[in-house]
Length: 456
Image 1 (cartoon, rainbow, N blue to C red):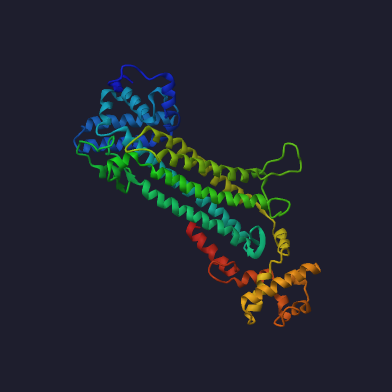
Image 2 (cartoon, rainbow, N blue to C red):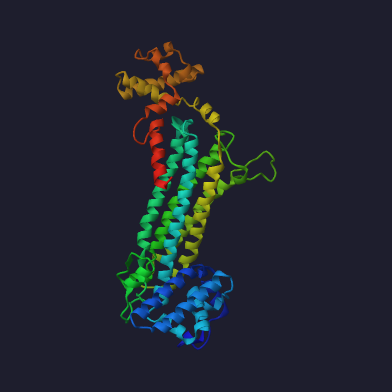
C-alpha cells in the first residue's frame, strides 16, 4: 500500500504476500476490530486529540465497513495483509484522508492484541453456553433413568453397582469444572491492551480506562512490552478447551463401548450413527469416535502455540500470527463437539435390562459381602480375604454369590446368617448414603444441585 510503504521502494513478492497474509483467516475478527476502532476514535475525540467531526466521520465509516462485511459486499484483498489493514483501506475509500487519523496513538501490535482478547472473551462465553446445553442433556437423561442400576467399573472390570444417573452426573461434574476453568481464563482475557502502542506505550494523553469501559474490559494492561507480546490468554483458552475435549473423549469412549454388542447398554440414534459401506448389519458410533479423534486436534493446537511462544524475545514478533488459525480452529472444534454431543446424549436410547443383566457378572457384590462381615465384627482385611476365598469357591462351583447357600457361606465364616441373602445390587447402591455417593437419595440431591447450577 503506497500510503504506508515509507522506506520501501518496491512491493513484496507475490509469494511473500500469500505467505504472510493472515486475511484469509483473521477476517473473522472484523466485528472486534470495528468495535475497538470506534472506542479508540471516541477516546481520541474525548481527549481532544481528534476533532468531534473527524471522529464522527470515522465512526460512520467504520459502521459502513462493518455493514458491508455483514452483507457479503466487502472485497477482501489478500495484498492488504490482515483484517486491520483491510478495514483501514476501505475506510480510506469511504472517509477520505481523515481515515489516516484513526491510527493516531495506536499500533497494529496493540490493535491485534485488543481484537484477539475480545475474540477470546466472546469465544469463552460461546463455549460456556455450549457446555450448559450438554450439561442439561445429561441432567435430562439422568432424571429419566434415576432408578436404573448398572455395573461401575475399575480397570474395565465390574466393580460395584451404581446408578446410571450417578454415572451420567460424573460427566456433569467434569463439565462444571470446565465451565469454571473458562471463567478463570476469561479474567485473564479481560484486560485491555490498547494504548500500549508498538511496544513502549503512546506519546499522547490517552484515557485507557475510558476505552476499557467502552469495550467492557475490567482492567487495563500494566506493561506495554508484555501487553503486545502476551498470548498467555490464548494458550489458556486452548488449555481449557483441551481439558474439556478430554472429558468429551472419555464420554465418547464409554459410549463406543456401551454401544457394542458385548455391552449393549445403549443404542445410538440413527441420526448420530453411520452404516458400514460393506457390512449391512453394522451401526457404527462414528460421531462419538470423531469427537474422540478431534481431541488430539485441539491438543496439537495447544502444543503448537506453546512451542511457537517459547523462544520469542520481547516484544511483538510475527511468529505470533500463528495463534489465530489455532485459536479459531480450536474454538470451532470444541463448539461443534459440545453441540454434537448434546444432541447425541439427548437422543440416545439406554437399555436398562441389559445393564441389570450385567450386574450378575463379575461377582459385583463381593465388597458388600466383605462389608457384611465387617459390620459383624471382623477386621476388614480378614473380611477381604474370606470374601476372596468365597469368590473362588463360587467360581469353582459355577455359581454366583447370590446363588451360594448359607452352608456355602458358613464354610468360610460362622458370622454369616440367613440375612446374607438380602444383599442385592439395589441394597448395595442404597448403602452408599454419603455425600457424593450413589445412593438414590444422594443422587436425587446431586440432580437437584445440578439443576440449580444450570438454572433449570
